[in-house]
Amino acid sequence: MNLDKFFNPKSIAVIGASRTPGKLGYTILENLKLSFNGKLYPINPNSGEILGLITYPSVLDVKDPVDLAIIVVPAEIVKSVLLECIKKKIDHIIIISSGFSEIGEKERELELKKLAESKKIRIMGPNCIGIYKKDLDMIFFPRNRLKRPPEGSISFITQSGAFGSILLDIMANDGVGVSKFISIGNKVDVDEIELIKYLEGDLSTRCIAIYLESISNGEEFIKVARKVTKIKPIVCFKAGKTEKGTEAVASHTGALAGSSAVYSAAFKQAGIIEAKSSEEIFDFAKALANQTVLKDNKIAVVTDGGGFGIVATDAAIQLGLELPSLSNDSIKALKSFLPSYASTKNPIDLTGDATVERYQKALEAVLKDKNISGVACIALMQLPTLTDEIVTVLRDCKVFGKPLVVCSAGGQYILERNRKLEAFGIPVYSTPERAVKALYALYEYGNILKREESEKKK
Image (cartoon, rainbow, N blue to C red):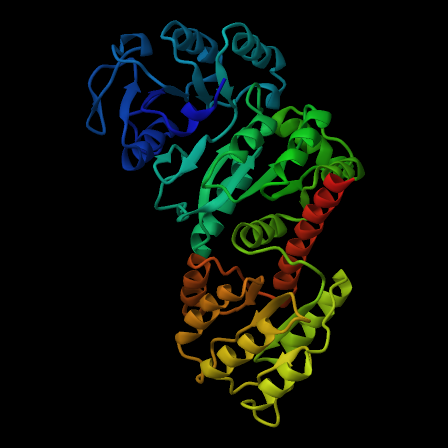
């Protein structure tokens, strides 16, 4: 069954809608009212209105068809509510409620699974926070406490609602866009495998990012991911790698987690870029969603701060990237406008009095150089010589068709300019190491595509 009604419903019933601000059933309805253009049906046993919408005692009292039901009631009555949804012929259901296998109530969860299979309905959850996209916000965090990111091209699947919500907040703060955010919780029915299949054909998704605690069907996961990574990148962060972490997974979603080495091998086989930390899943995803692949390991570092240039160089070499010498023509071009105290060696140091014009000419020379396949650009925008035009210069580097990542760190003044760069699809990082690692992820994905191309020819 197609999953499209989860993401593009025409009508939604919120079962457990509340009149009390601060309760989940109130916040979910409020956020849907602010974002969703279809019909909303609050289900509450007490008649009246919530947020100006007429309530219904049961979903069976709604006369019109309902595409999607969101259940936010105590776990003890979820099954009876689900049976009403089945009677109403609602075949797409998101169960926000917790109180299932994550607290040892496996039998209660098994009942949901049996209903999904026997009645041919699709269930997302339980123990999840649902879906967020620009026109479908059912996340139960108030908007004044958790910012919503702009529309973008990263789709994020997460087993942990808390992990996902924090990442959403960070993305919003940094101005990084999201296409779809999907919290799957205990994944009694819909899992990461089906969602990867769905997102393969989703035109607004250019990169799939996944936070996983367990995989139920490893063989199928590898098969599906390997097919999808030929078309669009997947970056995955696996939590629960230590003995204690594995125990925590069992108490969080009631799932079993395998060893770190097994997952790393599976990701490699599937063509998935593995993130080793919560920071990396964010860093890699925004680079993979917005930049071309790095075709080989030859990069340049362009900086206005010598120390950061050295740190970036060390990070690159440790990862196996190279900083080759520029061609004679490129060096000649750089010397024509750089002061004598600037460095034309790779890393290229434009020095602490760098201007926008100096950056523009230097980046053009470096990106045109055939020895260079990608650039890590360090721009310390606090310099009085750098005007806001640096944002335009970095944006325009896209015309060269080579990947560019930026390191730019600082307070509110810098953050405002970084957000503009992110809106243009230029990934920005607060440290040289993070920027270079993101460039390496683009190199990894380039190698994955090469591997697939070479296997086609065999």
